[in-house]
Amino acid sequence: MSVSAKLRRAPLRAVTGAYILNSGVGKLGADDDTSKTLHGFASGTYPFLGKMQPKAYAKALGVGEIAVGGALLLPIVPPMVAGAVLAGFSGALLNVYWNTPGMHEEGSPRPTVRGTPLAKDVWMFGIGTALVADAALEPAHDKVVELEATVSEKRAQKSRRASRKAARASAKASTESARKAASKASKDGVDYLKQVRETASALQAEAAKRAAKSAKKAQKRTEKASKKASKRLAEVKSEYVDVAAEKAKQAKLAAQEATSKARERIAG
Image (cartoon, rainbow, N blue to C red):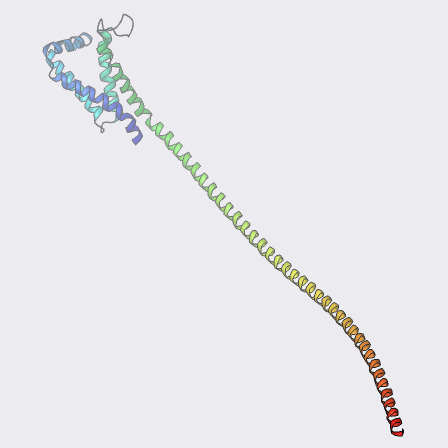
């Protein structure tokens, strides 16, 4: 018996069992009037009970109710047995209700005011029938539950396999993506380094070219300045040589003139 079956039957068995057990205990000490009333109802439907004393019948009915209530309350009693006992007991009481004049409307199961206390036993008959039906259908129900559990487990296994497969595919895709990214990064790095080297070489060549050009220009400026200085020096030299020659000539002439004058003085 599954735990779920015990749980769904427990409220029915506990409430009904406690109600009938309490009723049975109360009938053990029933007074004469109550015993006669109970005996009268029962003997009208079951004539063989007319031979019993009212007190004895009330006690027997109380013992029977205690037995039925105990069967419902004790978990060791199978639900099929407990339900059958309850259905039989309540069926007997409903038979008394049906066969006792004035308990229900003519030609109808609807109870009269007087028959309402007996008509309420119909719920016990319903509970007993439900326990019997539930116990009878339990194997099929458990089989359905077992099949559903098996199907659910297979679906869960399939889902887990699909999840693992998807995880492996994702990991593989991630690894491949990472490998491609690393390869691309490495290639990009090599290309970038090559580009940097080419750029550096180009800059060096451009710098050397500019330096050579600047040196050439400086050389030309130097040569030009040198030529200009040489020309200026030649001009200055020519100018000063001519002046010096003129002055020397003048000095020579002055000296000759002074000599002539000196000779003239000496001669005179």
